[in-house]
Amino acid sequence: MNIYLREITKDNFEAVSLLDVYEEQEDFIASNTWSMLEAAYNPEYIIRAIYLKDTPVGFFMWVPTSSQKIAIWRFMVDKKHQHKGIGRQAMHLALAEIKQDQQLKQIEICYDPKNRIAKSFYSSLGFIEIGLDEDGEKMLAIINL
Image (cartoon, rainbow, N blue to C red; front, top):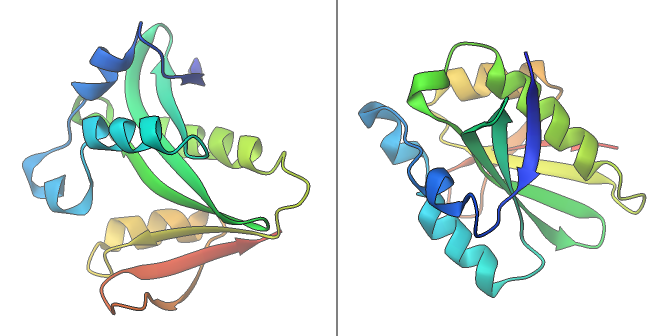
């Protein structure tokens, strides 16, 4: 499978903004359009499109929360491309890119604690749950580097 991450530019932002998840997944994820807008006004936010060959099929956004920690704030695969191993391969690519920062000590992700699929997926990638966020709404999981 030819999966890779690509920067989002004026040439592909519209296609990335049109990617969608299943209706039952909508409560678990922010829109790509909103995320790209956030990144436009926060230059330290990193956004990437997930590509399958020449087609955008997903989206990432990660944010430095300190000089030693990156938080993955957004991750999605379009509903037409789910359950094909694309998300797993894309996450490996994103983690490899993030880990290039030699100062990093930790990568964090959060998800709805009711989302058992997310829990299993992130655990299989090495994320370890550390408890709920300060609002008691999202589960935090980390990879220590």
